[in-house]
Length: 243
Image (cartoon, rainbow, N blue to C red; front, side, top):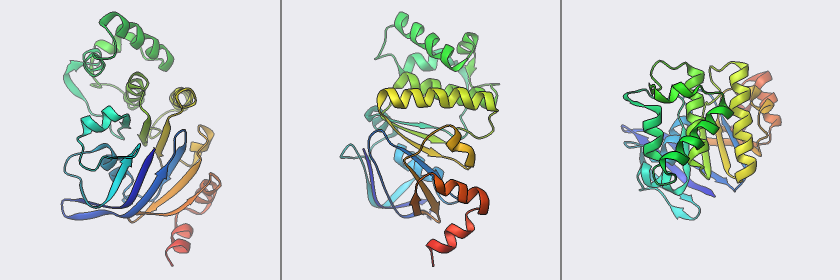
């Protein structure tokens, strides 16, 4: 589904991604971990087409289509969804208006409201939140639920979750990952989960865990490597892989 070949990414003349390779098949979960500043969020941004992030070298394919030069809108239309680490607030636009705009070609007004209410119930989002300004005054957990609300309504093929689990209480974590797992299993989509949380395997079952360091993936393994990270940190892995 996703194929990244020898990728180099530049931000403001600063090389962040340095020869990264990654392949993701349909219906797979890939967890990406690594020290701060390794390029994890940059990778998510470049896949989703964020402006001002320049590809110096390499290619990104989604379902065999080259997406290097596509806009964020074009990439999202192909079925790629990014949940932000720090969801933005939009004053003057209600959640419902935002959702209505991004889904206007999928449902009529009556169907849309029924669908949104159904998903809100699954995520335990209060319906009156739909008529508040987008994310304004929301808690961290409410903002992250809003990201998953959009995901469930848009029905993407590839979901990128950038620290969806950061700063959440145990109840919100359970609600979010319950819905993510149900969606993944039903739709056979693929997930990229960027996280620092070594407890992530309590909530999902990754096919692969990748360690990103200094702009490239230095090791790919199964979920057992997370226990190693929990016990020793990244130092041992980095030292062993870059000798």
